[in-house]
Length: 234
Image (cartoon, rainbow, N blue to C red; front, side):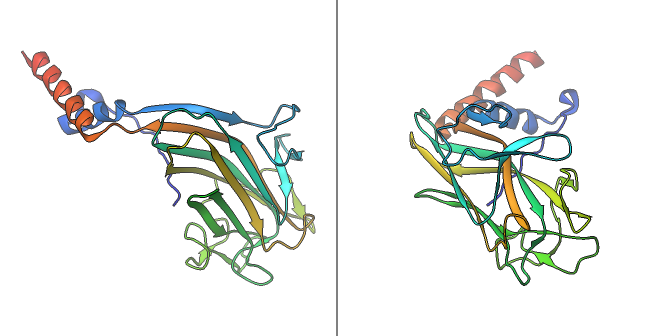
């Protein structure tokens, strides 16, 4: 399941005690970035099973891809102690993705090798007012949404199909239970017609590990914070 993280501004002086305590408990958890790549360097990347890189026609962004009906794996080791992992990345859908409809379905999936499927859905990128539908933000076969639903950018990369601008960008933050020292993740495109017609890439890949405190530790953190609040009132 996709999980997005939204940042907000907290007015601390007006915040209720419950919100302050919750903030203190969240601070007990640790998060560490163990891998990040914006693909701007030309250096060899042994952690990826493909080193194909492209540059977008507009804004000159270098990304991993583009690919078609391909599976590309990220391999990481020596992650350290953790209980959760978050995978963040930008997904580029390039040219005429058909979503749920013929000649699709045009599918993109992200799977942890030996573990969870983090994303498995379809996307539509087409001309304005097109009738095709996509599964995202639901899984494949469970959604019927308008094209480009959830996209954070539209027609910003500079790709065209028969004179029509056709590209979109989605951002994902996918958090899942994981405690192993080794992590392998597959990024998979399927049902696509050909790389000159429908392709994809990923950019700004970031992997972070999180240690969630045990319930006892969280309780102690809350007690300590409450004691601090009492001292401040005196």
